[in-house]
Amino acid sequence: MGDAGAVKDCRPNARETSDGTSSTCALYAFVRKEAVVSSQIEGTQATLVDLFEYEAEKDDRQPLEDVREVCNYLDALKYARGQLKSPKSTSSWSTTRPRA
Image 1 (tube, rainbow, N blue to C red):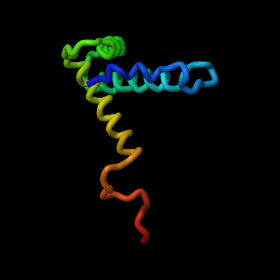
Image 2 (spheres, rainbow, N blue to C red):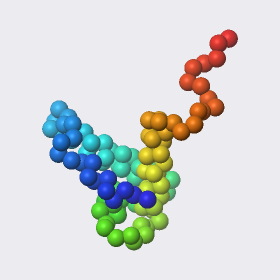
Image 3 (cartoon, rainbow, N blue to C red):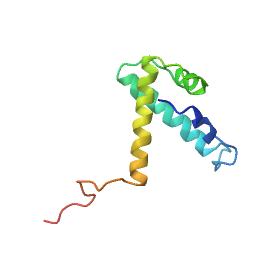
Image 4 (spheres, one colour):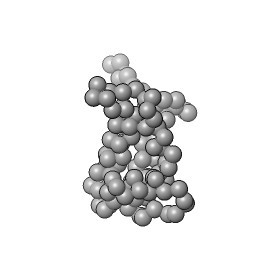
């Protein structure tokens, strides 16, 4: 599900962009907006506000089904980023083309 502690990544000492905003905060918001929009293409009705409200909750209430779908998207993205950083197994595909 959503990472309730994810907001802590928007810390003041994160690298700032040329417009003075934190690049970590900008990335945090962009990824969530992308998750919401991508999920809406699949038919969900969750909004970015719904997601932020869910992530800000301190209790363990279950999210609305549409928010859960957005969280699943975020979980998949987090997993993929982790695999790119340090793959746990060798892949069956190669990044280079076989020689002819």
